[in-house]
Length: 62
Image (cartoon, rainbow, N blue to C red; front, side, top):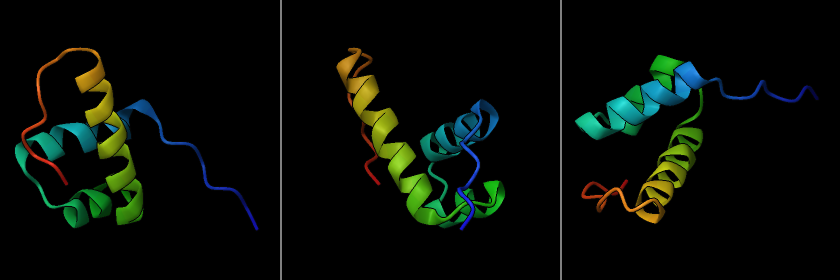
């Protein structure tokens, strides 16, 4: 079984920007050709980092 390639910065930024705009996770996943669970996981990680960094509150939870 081959290990999947790591997520690059371009795909991560696509996830974050589309998620902030309110795009459905399924649409974001299709755009970057990754499973929805991956998008969900990345969105949760980025939301926690923003909260920890004091960048306000996250108003849109997945």
